[in-house]
Length: 590
Image 1 (cartoon, one colour):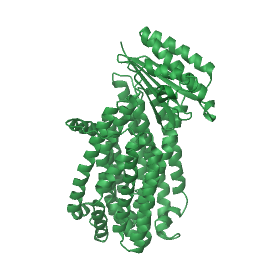
Image 2 (cartoon, helix red, strand yellow; image 1 turned 45 degrees about the horizontal axis):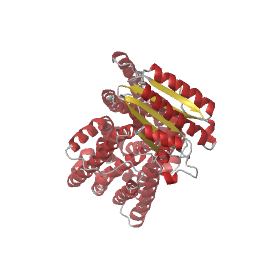
Image 3 (cartoon, rainbow, N blue to C red; image 1 turned 60 degrees about the vertical axis):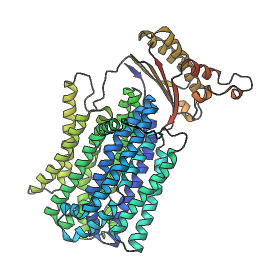
Image 4 (tube, rainbow, N blue to C red; image 1 turned 90 degrees about the horizontal axis):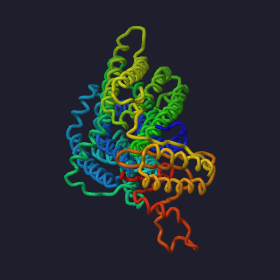
């Protein structure tokens, strides 16, 4: 595998483009939920904040159901888009929408019928339970809205439109805050109003994103799956199981820690833990934004068979997440600010204690974030066992760690969070290192990325000038010869690469021309796969090459080279995704 001349520019730019939109999306969504707690904290009281926190595990369960169906489906669609199997994209998308509607409505009915029993299972604190019941009973009516909103956000973002998702979520968050203000502050509906605010946000998301899906540029089309819906469901569950297990265990973790904190520290301790949890969820805004970016871009890279690109993606994701989570830690170290947001008066005993606890709690965020990024890498690669084992270890260690420290004398319960997250990360490093040495296929320790490809691979970043393009074309010719590609196919690939790469170097505009574009070629028993990616201005060479004669130009020579490319290789496609032009060529083996 020749990879010495591949730099991180293209992958890093795609990640940063996606992360900016994904983080804004997740931030708007989380801030909308946090606004519920802030407003009820000021208007209703701190008990209302604790009550909403008590039923948070149920909200996480709904997320888990959405993860189970949509996360795996999204990963499959990303890989299908990367390999340009649009029929599979349509069948997977349609099947997933049907599943979400069916399961969402069933769950909404179930929660509505048994909401009081669910609350009593989570808490035996009478002064909190009634408010928790009111919140969950109202929220249950729109459970399917939450699941559908989550699924559409994933699909649209993976289709290279993360900014569209940001627009939808920001609009929904604005509506949520407006509804919160009207229902809680003006109408005095209390926690019921907070639940209605969240549901209004999901409804706005769905309306805006559904409108995008009808546009010609969308990769998703409704296609009745027929009997294949069973197979799609099975594949969805298989792909989404690790993240579902992870989030299900997280919901259980929150519920168990709620019980531990309430038992050892009382209602004031539960309030402090509720605020700490909100700050953890705020940091998860950044983590979730990076994870969504990784699944979308990483899924496409796997579909393109670009493992070197995946290595670069993981490294850049770890760098970005460290910087973003550091911002949250800084916020948590500012005295009084966080407490004031949740209705705690500065200078009070509760305010002083909250500030001190937040500084301890902040120490767990970086190891927690790194664990989540690595867990996502395992899921992208299909290492289901490693994903489930790591997620399970995280849950067990958090609960046992917090409980064990709470039982000790001379050390505070809050240090259990820090110790648990560090131990989980150490376990993850040790487990993956050991497994990388035991598996037959050679994989990297920690990330578990395979180091052996299915065939000879050419990987190169090329500067935007003709001299460097010519050097790269010469190397491509030598690579195809060494890979024993049949002469006829090699000529076709060389001609296509020469025309397309020269076109990129010649016609790109702006500051981007001082950087590089990527060329990835893999040869295997199925044929030759070529992927060209550049971050120049949007231009579709496939459409230009297939233009009708009257549109060619005054002298009949405009786009002549591109017309030749589209005529000699029919399996060629173009898509503008993540701020980049991507051309994919597949020449079948003879």
